[in-house]
Image (cartoon, rainbow, N blue to C red):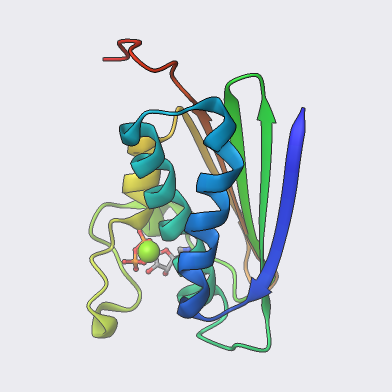
Length: 145
Ligand SMILES: Nc1ncnc2c1ncn2[C@@H]1O[C@H](COP(=O)(O)OP(=O)(O)O)[C@@H](O)[C@H]1O
Ligand SMILES: [Mg+2]
């Protein structure tokens, strides 16, 4: 198993860092552009949620991105120790956003659930949230759908 962990300040400036880190981490597997793009999208959604909703843009707080690679199965874990989610069912509903004022589309969790081979979100209100994404990285040229 190959693994890496990245801890960074809760600012949207670091969203690009998280995207590049995950791309570099999976690069040795020679992934398809489609897989790279989907994986970057999921990381962006999870990391932006931690920054915006978990920490309310409080840059003094840390977001953790943990990645594990077992053969071609990638596990991405994004952790924040922020606000947490009071009602997970409501949060997961397509188009639901607690911050429509920020023009959030409320589709982040739905997108992650759709793109991932396995998706889980755990949260304790007042304690923080953890997103666990699994994605099988196809061999190039391999038909997946
Ligand atoms: N890490 C998190 N911490 C606290 N709340 C979260 C977190 N991730 C998601 N949420 C809650 O779930 C809702 C839905 O998230 P999402 O589908 O990404 O939509 P959006 O980010 O556009 O609001 C958010 O509006 C927020 O209330
Ligand atoms: Mg979101």
